[in-house]
Length: 309
Image (cartoon, rainbow, N blue to C red; front, side, top):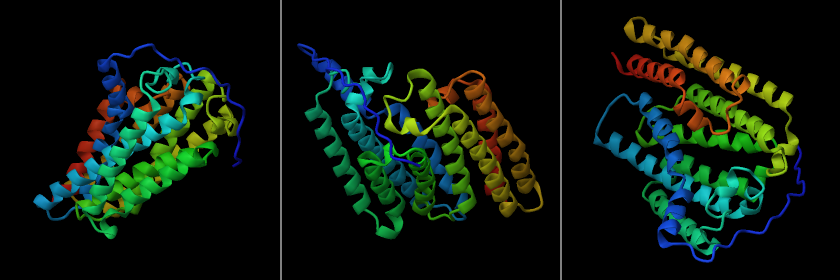
């Protein structure tokens, strides 16, 4: 893994004569990436699967973890958009982002990021270090990502994937449930697959100039990495099911979820390798009815197999 820094063509930022207040507000809202909040809404609540005794504290804990990761992830997005504005202008899609397009000033974006970080700090301060270390770790590694790790091939997508595993762990701790290392590994490996698929799509669409780390990748290498992530996801999930298995209906439901996970992984491979998708995993999955059906059914089986006596 090498730190690679090819020269990125610099283009003059568009400077609109006047940006209407409504457009500025809409641009600030876009900087928060609200469409990405669904990631936390799906991953953080997985932590309740390890809860044995339910209470109001369980719901409050999950709500706190959700709010914290929504705010923290938005702050990370804003800071990255500020620092990546020149590279974004060289990308056919990202150049329309609020800062890169000139619709939101750097000063306004910086104030927004500072406000989000203050809110995140307040939420972190509401819990002890033992209860909030996953979210704190998320902020630390993303700061390192912003300052340089995003330029290191493989490390960049590993950081992205670890953020989702940390979401799950934080949800489990906040809900006072048991953390499954195998389930955390499943989430990490699956998200590594998504991130590698995104890098594959980026190389195919815009080459490697707009993102320094892309120079450390190639399509064949990413295909191998995606295959490794798929196998790891399946093995980790199967081992998680084995560890949680018990005779009866719950155990049977968990076992049935395993081939469904296989089907989900195969479907995603089809989307990125055959249909050449993967540029926005969240959008691609949300638009694919097969994946939604399989994922929803798997989630129901996993919940029932965990909570039923």
